Amino acid sequence: MTASLADIWVYLAASPLLSLTMTLVAFQGAQWLYRRTGSPALLNPVLTTVIAIVAVLLATGTSYQTYFQGAQFIHFLLGPATVSLAIPLYRQFERVRRSALALAASLLIGSLTAMGTAVALGFVMRVDAVSLVSLAPKSVTAPVAMGISEKLGGLPSLTAVFVIVTGILGGALGPLLLDRLGIRDPAARGFAIGTASHGIGTARALQESEVAGAFSGLAMGLNALATAVILPLIWSLLFR
Image (tube, rainbow, N blue to C red; front, side):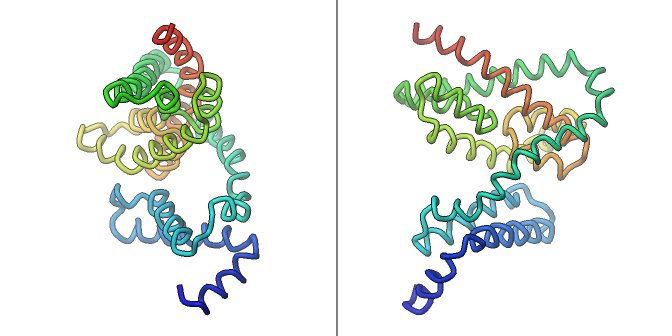
């Protein structure tokens, strides 16, 4: 940056509204690009927004802590947004009730697969136990994953990175993979995406349909519960 541009940035950065405005503008631009290019999986708005914001922060030498001070209002809205997922789920309650057995089996298999692949990858790469337990809950929504990691001796901050990367990749590539596998049922697609990629995946599922979003939100919540129960048991067996 030139000296004049640097001075302007320092002046603007003093306002907490800068980070909030930058985030909203980046996301709106990402959505416009996503729709304009035919909604390709690799241009998922969340992924594009993250890349754009990271690029700005690196170019301006702005720390994440400084950015978050202004953007934390969006972080606050994550709570109400998560609770609001109950609305489409309520509308699909009868369908969920009829599919309860299949959903339970899918949840168990999906949860074990998510944890098992993470642990297996860690063993193959010979990572230490702290990194391994930090990686294991990668498919669970961040607050729960960080809590599980901390209780088992992992690093919550490292877990948060794994969770975010998993969510972005799942939201971007999950629908593409399901298309290739010929899975068209919105309930099945939503449940698979929610199990594998938690909240970010659920946001992507809601873009497909209300049914997919409802089942994805259900999977996100149930997988968090299942992982919180199963992972400590697996961990105690592995390192007994």
